[in-house]
Image (tube, rainbow over all chains, first blue to last red; front, side, top):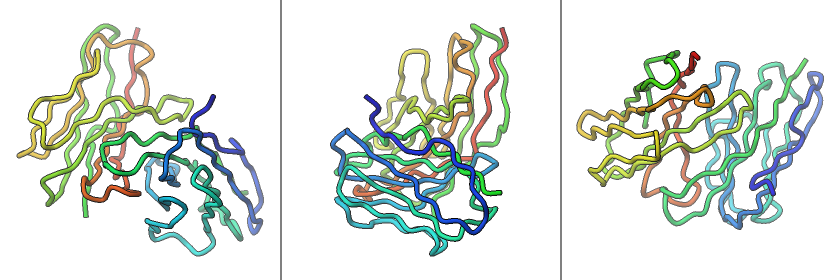
Length: 114
Length: 117
């Protein structure tokens, strides 16, 4: 069983569209994240949730809206997609309590905006 | 703000030989964690090794070991007996100790490792 699963894995869409990426973890973790990896492969955090509460909200356009219906799910909705949104988006999870706990990543969702 | 720097965009090594990937970081904190992640072409992010800053002993995981120099803020990764499957992008990452819930990983730019047969 995949620990952190995201769908879709690949997504090609036109500018201006709205799209969502779903993420689920079956590890029983209480903390989930979204990271963005740009074309130069630089990884940066976008959001994190702990027990469905938003903890980290980096400088991300308002067009990006995360939603956590429960501890095991963290979805990412993107409105009015732009060319610059093309990237690989990684969902991740960890158990809170200590920063040494491993952060487990999903396989990434490769978004291409044309 | 914490920053992580990997000064080697690309490295190559012959199969069965040893290679060292460099990482430096900047922080004003005394307690933190450091990690090396591997990203093969599949894009999966895989934890290779972790180091707690309060531990003086360098972490090891089979063929992977680190050289942690806290005063110099240096955290290099040594891969011994390199294998073809080690070819990947390697990311160094930093995480605060006190920001436990939802604490972020700050990544370096990555080092692309090629293993030559």
